[in-house]
Length: 354
Image 1 (cartoon, rainbow, N blue to C red):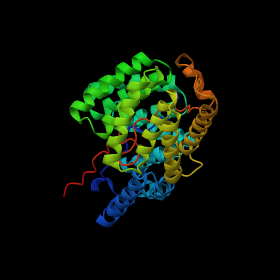
Image 2 (image 1 turned 30 degrees about the vertical axis):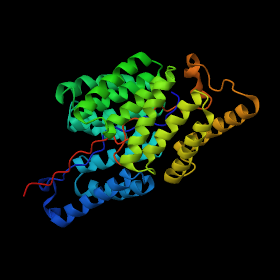
Image 3 (image 1 turned 120 degrees about the vertical axis):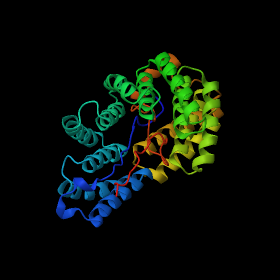
Image 4 (image 1 turned 90 degrees about the vertical axis):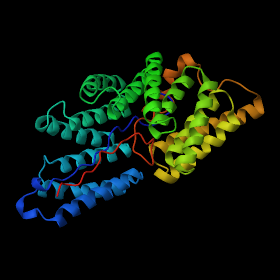
């Protein structure tokens, strides 16, 4: 699907470590505190988008958790689950899928297919499949877990709504625009009512809806929405936040589709510079922003010297474009707070009862 980078993450997990789960020889507060501190440190790196640091922290933590708590303990599995998210954030999809499937197998065996943790891993596996371009598989997985989430958590629970949001992305990635728009509008309505119109999760779905509107030729409406979202994100997250760069990228493509190349070039340059600064020039996001900027720049020069002429393919041919230059991994989906699209709700870390 044109435009965005990665259909990604749904739920990042933090769990408590019950004292009763530890062996008697390691039931000290110091041991518990050390594991908790390592998990918190790794989570902080992840939230900030510092993937190499987060990966190192999780790889240091997991052997200790495995040895002290056991391979099937909640903290061990959560750390492995979150390592998979970190790997996915670095576009190392094969490694991430392997880790997700390993965690899923253990959770299904020990907790059951309908357990919240199991559903979380299935959800994130679905978004990974989307990131790999396996949109039909992602849709199938999301449709399988949605009824369970609705039954066990409720139709307006955050995790249920996340699944609906990601389902809309999968639908749009397959060109099922009417279904995607219907799903996006439903999610936006729920999030506006329950979270507020400027909440990060609400903005995330508003941006997804704007992208679909843009893909279906409703460029003016999409531009208006992208500008509104960008202004809110700049105000709430700061001008150097990666989610702001994503908005710049989306807006640049929308402007270019209307042959507003000068404005599009400004926003594409900002996206490219921002992603290079935050992720490095070789990261997938930075490389795709570079590709978009080069295309827009060439079109802008051509317009100056030769006058306006078509640039992107007509709307009817949009589905063919990803193979040529646009991103193939689908749109930005549910991602962690404070640096991506802030759609993740961290599970509350509850302290053990005294």
